[in-house]
Image 1 (cartoon, rainbow, N blue to C red):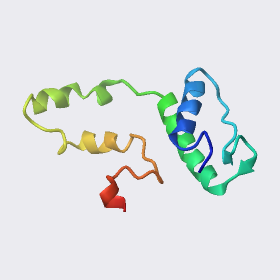
Image 2: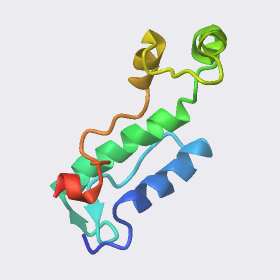
Image 3: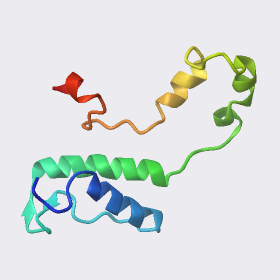
Image 4: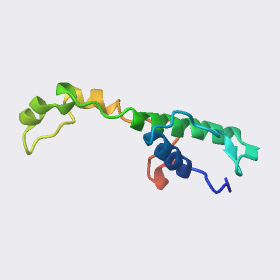
Length: 108
């Protein structure tokens, strides 16, 4: 992708607009200033749009997500990995389908 606005640059541009209140994403799949349409870019732009939507929806703050009782139960030296709430809420995080977050050696 030789486009001036490829990769996560498109994510950041879309995120700023979404946080300002925009509710329309324009140009999915477009590269080269909209002159060219690319199916691969469309797939990635869909991924970026999903990530933007995740951020704009915010973080729920309630008794369950604050986990005050779990924090008190674990204490300062324990871990949260064995708690059911950890697994449940971990799945609520942004889960990209196509972006590979592993280190280079693992995905090469």
